[in-house]
Amino acid sequence: MKSNDGEVKLALANSRESYEGEKEYYAGLSSKIENNKAVFVIDSLPFGEYAIKVYHDENSNGKLDKNFMGIPKEDYGFSNNATGMFGPADYDDAKFIFNKEKMTIEIDIN
Image 1: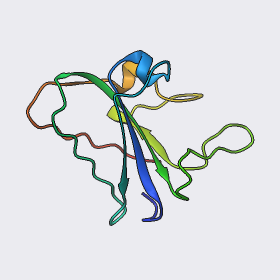
Image 2: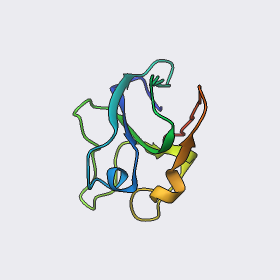
Image 3: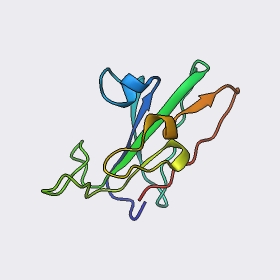
């Protein structure tokens, strides 16, 4: 993160429909920022296919702030460091298979 202000919000989706907002996320989490990093630990996650959306809620207002054109003003990222052209990264680019006892997913926020 650019700063330790606010918190990081994470949405864990377990389907395309969940990722695209057509149904609820599997889990929604928030974390404080220390040394410009946020760490999330998810226990008891069933093996399967997932995708992550994350953003830096720098002003702690609970939403991803956007400008008048709808472009995010706060930093964000997706699993696999996937990117989108005119909106969020596509589910197929962000999805990953969770199939190990422990797995680390690192996401660059910008």
